[in-house]
Length: 83
Image 1 (spheres, rainbow, N blue to C red):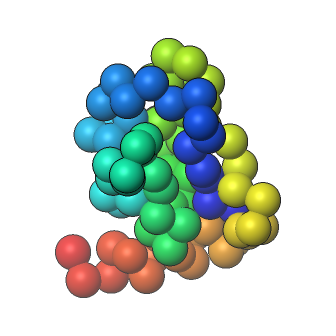
Image 2 (cartoon, rainbow, N blue to C red; image 1 turned 60 degrees about the vertical axis):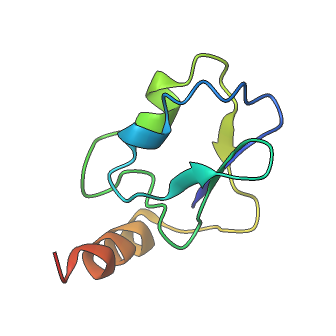
């Protein structure tokens, strides 16, 4: 399942550089996560690095993107195939 940043985001900038898939970017008001690129760090780390570093716990599972660990690994492989 992809992750989403909620309105508690304080724009502290710590999550964006931690994302190995470059899925996090600055939106109109707060940071956002591209669900097509978010693998919850599957394939890179044991846990989502954005959630590890977030000082206000504003990152949640995205309710519209329910993906199994196998789905996330397949997405990781697709995203890294040409690297």
